[in-house]
Image 1: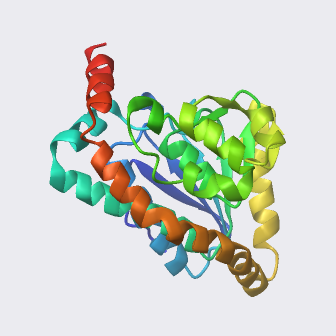
Image 2: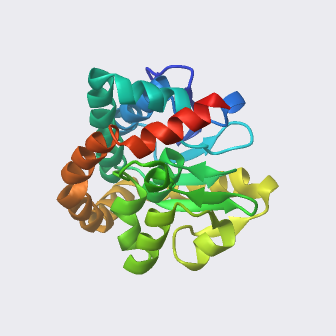
Length: 256
């Protein structure tokens, strides 16, 4: 099957495994409009692929994803139509990953910030490089954190820890992330992709219908939690794009 995606998101086949690479390495895979739209468009195509049995999600270069591109965030504060499209696509990313029929294995090869952190939180099994970290700095820059972390973390770790990291945006080092249940395995940097790929192939060899239905059973609880709060979360995030705190933060960052 040929995937209809821009060059910011690459898909390659390795037998029954699809390797998906965030592909803006010169910008640490920070999310711009094209990459955001591509991630939203990916999951229906994964589900439509009759030969896929597992997915490995990783980043090209030194990062998994460094979060939102500051220029893109600035555009979102000024363009209501773009903001509406982006939030609709954000909803598709969350629901698409939660509802994706095949297991998604994250190979977190470097920092996973903002949307990158959300993609990790929405994956099924996570292998994380020792030097990598997670962080969701939405609140710290003046935005409501509407997807990924705050939506899913309460099911992955304690509610108190979810609140702490959602409020502060503090970095969560790999070992700490494993200790509190946000990732499955912490491995040497050089091995993270290979170990994630090996696990994906292991899953791909299992009876496919049993895997898909078992994932569905497990994710029913996650889907209920997500749908229970996602519309409010996205509405609140839309309002926060007009916050003076975000404007001040972006002006400071863009001036550098």
